[in-house]
Image (cartoon, rainbow over all chains, first blue to last red; front, side):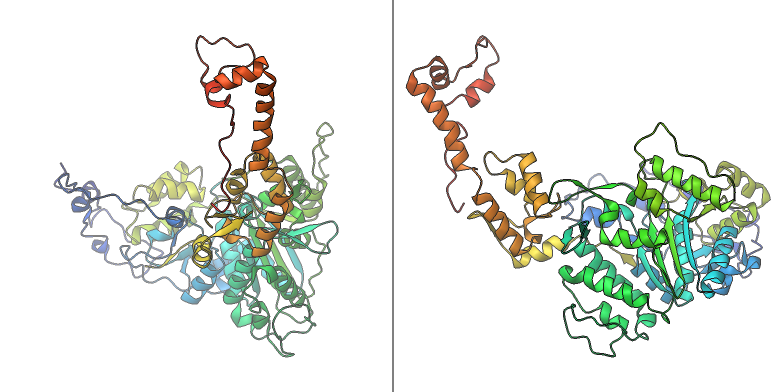
Length: 447
Length: 145
């Protein structure tokens, strides 16, 4: 028997209890916080009516699990927030502001799979994000150095749920807004878990492998997301070994689109990469989420039945060489590897290499390797040589407040947002771990 | 509402074009795992199938429909050089037949479907009943099925 009143209606704050949030100017009418809900009717069960249960078709479950919902018509519209601008991401005075993502940028980010299924975009009317202190620190420094045609090689580190992937997303957003060529590998574990096809690249010693279907998909995503930048650039090198007819003055977008065959995906990708490395091109941003996954021996086997090291795959090798400083970028580049903490096998080599990189960055004595551990992977140390480690920290109470006010204005957080409640939630969330803050505040209403 | 779905439907697309895949003259459904296909041949187990697949750089979760025709042909070529299926089955059956024709104890026990190596027969001889038969491994696989 369903209750006459739903529990959510009872939990709805009255007009008196809800204070107008300070950071959202036009949010003047608190009664607009979901005055009506259909949950009671929705939750009422009708036992007499038995519907036949249909089993989901092949692939449907996974599609549901991996779906990314970027808008929700049931959420309230939050007006008065500005659209995100490139300047905002590097401006120290913008710290703590919420900004909406422009539609074009959302499309670009979605194409390169910057949004993750684990992030709660589906609770809100349209995608917004918080400009954090970490964002401004990281992107401010990065933008300045890329303008000087330097190469920024960074590993984004931090506790679980602290917002590493979100910082990765903000980095890509900055890349798109600053007209860089953004290449993103959304899940590094897809490349090593032996779930996608692989093939031997002929005439390579030591032997190298590619992921034909994966690279083709990546190439197509990269072309459509970066079309504006790529279509302005004309090819400079000879590409006689590629299929199809490339005219002399074809653009890089045409080059990226030259094949639909997985077999030729890697040669085309490689050709595009070589073109981008020519002087006078726009700067490159190459990001990868789940860096620790590619720092191990993969589950794939070579024709001689040996396990293949992740760095023997052409795509990961490209990334790792760029990250380790072996590739020279004449136009400036940002190579960003995002670590993952929710899902990784602890690896002593990665830990030690990052520890050493951190010490080098702080100009402290470099910690020695454990003399009694023989399984250090030399290639991992090579790949992480001289990288900068950026630690994502917790958010401040000010940032938490601005975020919670946005949640309240969206109708997701049904409580009065004042200093006391912000402080309470901030403390509950392990002193401002963003993922935990979402957990204590949003998961009550997440379906 | 904007929903981006993860594209995991590559297989179905290909299976529409190829309805059957022939490996060693036997047709298989294109949705069938390559690993399972290989292991459907008598005497070819997980170790050998893994090695064959590595040799042609086929990943463990690959399905027949996604393989290029070239690879399917070379798989057939590879399998045709191996002693598998009917040939392998016949070797085992011949060995048992030899024991029986000699009139040895082991041959007789095989013929009776009883344990061969001195086990008790009071209880628990299900495995012996199942395996110790003259045509061990069943009859020949009919070509083209």
